Structure formats: C-alpha cells, structure tokens
Image 1 (cartoon, rainbow, N blue to C red):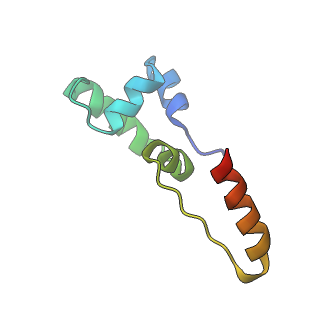
Image 2 (image 1 turned 90 degrees about the vertical axis):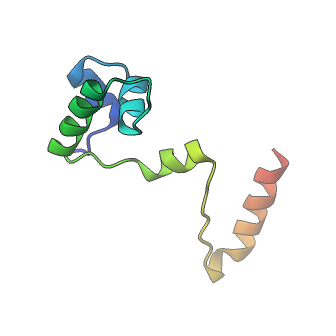
Length: 83
C-alpha cells in the first residue's frame, strides 16, 4: 500500500490540500475542530510528511556527496547555481 499524502487526506475529508496542510501545521486560520479531524485521520492512516517537500518548502536542502561522485557533484552544483 502506498504512503498516504496530504492530497489523499484532503480528498477523503472533502477539504482542500492547503486546508489540510495548514491544519497539520496548526495554522490559526483553521478551526480547532478541523485541525483535530485532520490530525486524527492522518494518525489513523499513518501519515508521514514528505521530507523532500518539506525541504523545498523551507528552502533547506541537504546534499550528500561521496568521494566517487565528487567531480560530477561539483559540476552539478555549479550548474544549478548558474540557473
């Protein structure tokens, strides 16, 4: 079975994905009742946040480079900096 996503939760609860995202982050614009419903559903279905999506949202990226890929990684990093 595939991992459940925010979009899956939103569809199941008839909410928008942004509402679900805000509810999961305790945004004050979302009612406590809705937050509880979303979090209870997420917990019951073993929701785990997508780490890559979180890194993109927070603009924090971690690059792991091993010795054999050093040259390629340097070229790749330099190329992305130029874009």
